[in-house]
Image 1 (cartoon, one colour):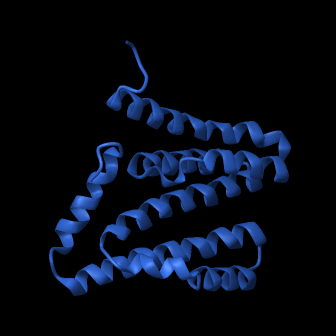
Image 2 (cartoon, rainbow, N blue to C red):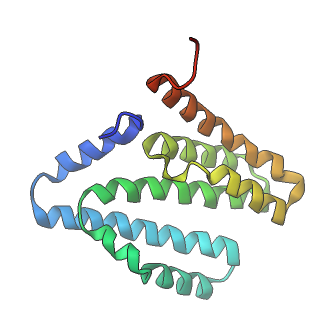
Length: 168
């Protein structure tokens, strides 16, 4: 478990819960990977507003060759769960742009915040969402910048932890 991701402790809890039983470990990886695939489907459905295209996109996502490597160890369950948080944040942000319900935005910011402190693999998601906002609804692009708050908090925490930034 890496010190630069404080919520990575969940990886230890997952590993403890499944112990050394290989069947349970494979089941955990399968279920977490399935969760990512389901969320890819919902993300594509939000983006394309077509169940058929979203299904096809999710199937194609599952056929990506390097994705098959994710079934090797229980460690990837940790990454799957972090990916899931980022996908949920993206889905909720799109819903916010469509119907202007602020609860979607705040829930998305919360998911992103937990995700970035879990594993920073989606650190640049706010930049992607700003660009997406500029394409879809330029008047609301500034709202996507609110996601930079948890990103900056993570960077400040990590910088202070390793002495990269902060008071001298």
